[in-house]
Length: 328
Image 1 (cartoon, rainbow, N blue to C red):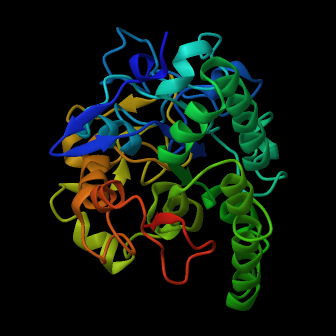
Image 2 (cartoon, helix red, strand yellow):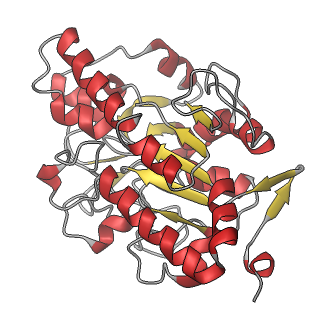
């Protein structure tokens, strides 16, 4: 069977949408943690609005879709990239994209140890390298190179690294040192350069969310009011931008993760936060919109649609020139 017939391509508004390869933590994990021994497993009522059926979790830490799900559907994709560890993620399934993200994971291998098993970024990239070999065996070297060159690579990770170090940070200078080290791990020394060597050319990298705004941090440090101003502005369309929808205890529902003992708010569309750490689909919809069509206030140096339209873009100041990418 020819590669041209095997590969699914969807044309929306003149844009050809590609295979998605996703790395990261619980913000983009779609079920890998179901296959490892970990406390970081999104049990029901996570996925309550996803549509998998009554009391069936989606593998996602939210009530429904995550940002990559929303963007993929907006661009015409019919299938969400499946979790790498799922036994069905083999053969031709790999051609539609794969999700390697693991809840609790970080840039550093030690991040998330308290959760038990998790797939560090280094191991996620190692799994991708294996996938690359499997795809090459399936469709041939040249077709595989083309597929991987045109794919979109999404990397959302780092918040857990900051969380794990938050208790030892006693000054802004120490925090700057930690962040500088994490940035170094991501760029020239490791992840970006490895992905580039493996064929990645279009990379979308998520910045860390305002950590001081989430219900977990508010409850941990007893914060009643106040947040990053930009985050407050984006949250104004919601009735509640402070409290978790799926909660057990805590002034903001930020003490215990969403689980089978949690109470769930009746109208998820009015809440920003789904649980102590993650957002509702309604909030993710806004994020996805800005990624797709936003200006430089939200993505730099281009938005998602512009990245798809201009596959030959070379970013001034990027880690590796002749490479396209977005940082948001």
